Length: 301
Ligand code: HMG
Ligand code: MG
Image (cartoon, rainbow, N blue to C red; front, side, top):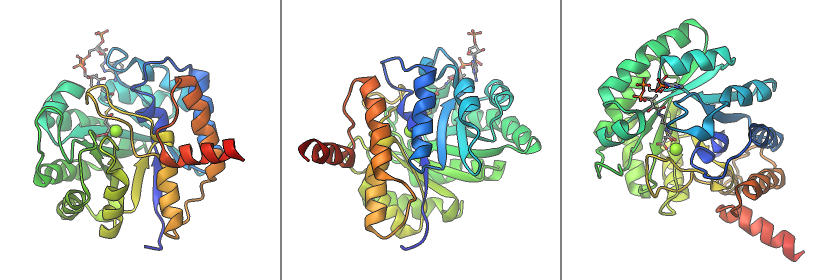
């Protein structure tokens, strides 16, 4: 496992979309800049969705415009439909992400349409993006369980992943939206889905609700997956996945990878400083075990 892993930092989007405390545009921009300063090169910075659905992501155009000046970095934004695509393109987006679900219940709650209808909606978005030279990432939510429908079969995940891949997504990120997966299920999922989408093009987007995310990632790494989505401090959740907590923490992922001899290029002290600042604004301490340990050791020294 000595090769490279790519981290997609989703804290400024997945992390902040569920926070009740209003965070200013300036603070969102500063958060992204701090993450880039810590060495993260791929950061999801916002979404172009309905302001009624997710008011926290309003003004994502301002965030994107302000941070999009680092050569060699990628700044991703979520786009649910053509209206969102137009806004993202106008703001200069170079990478967008469309988001489908493996389960009907979550699709309906999250984006107000069936899974099949969502693929129909994404088709012109991906076509236009391709024509405009914009890369498209695909998400599949509820890959290891759904808050509305319960168990989700790996074959259902494989089928939606294949559709996104065939549309032209360069990568499909598998979301354990409610963090219910366990390592053997995560491994089995990757085995099945990699029959449809090459493993090098699969991302692991695991929320940590039940504390299994790192173990699930390790199982995925053993299967050959090399793209990990994580959020600084373990921020996050989805308003349409009640009770689900944040993404696996970037600090915890970086600590595990570096401990395995996999270089991440991330400066842990700077990353924890970025987390501490956003946590201060949110008014909650970070849930990341590594950030907590580093903060405790700083206090005692
Ligand atoms: P809808 O109500 O069916 O849409 O919502 P509509 O087309 O009927 O439009 C309704 C209103 O929304 C209209 O405004 C539209 O203009 C507006 P009104 O006339 O009522 O004033 N609208 C928009 N405004 C701004 N940007 C847009 C846009 N589209 C329509 N793009 C819709 C459908 C998809 C828009 C809505 O349900 C929505 O925005 N959902 C977003 C949900 C979301 O962002 N969820 C969180 C991200 S997904 C996630 O967290 C999971 C992930 O992390 C992976 C994992 O963990 O599994 C990615
Ligand atoms: Mg998520």
